[in-house]
Length: 141
Image (cartoon, rainbow, N blue to C red; front, top):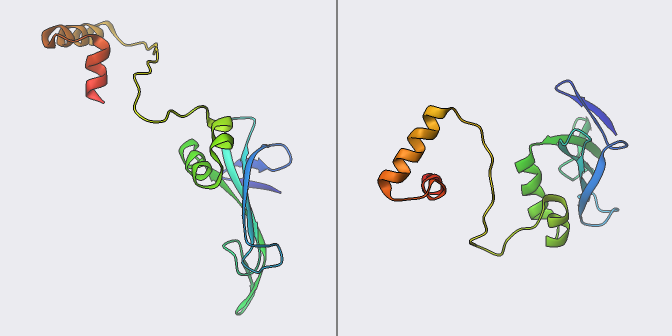
């Protein structure tokens, strides 16, 4: 399926399928299938297809419904939330990376560029509080 939404092309033929979930059996009117895709640009979208009593149903007359399909653009966070709800842990981590089992002391190096005056204020505040710059920044978040 191809769809242009807000001036952007979403195409299930060219995007990479990341995961899929379904509900009920194909012959059931409430049946649906959702597939998470990732475009070459890194954007995510959901392609859903379903029967006449599904969330993808389309009106085809007064009190008449048929099956339908839809493409839904997703933010990175929305794609992660969908995957967390609909995929198993291995598939989720294959797409979004490893997830820790809880709080950890795992450290990440972050390289940022800020103006000198801001850097001086951060160092001064950390020194006044007897903390490292890393600990000060972590305490703010």
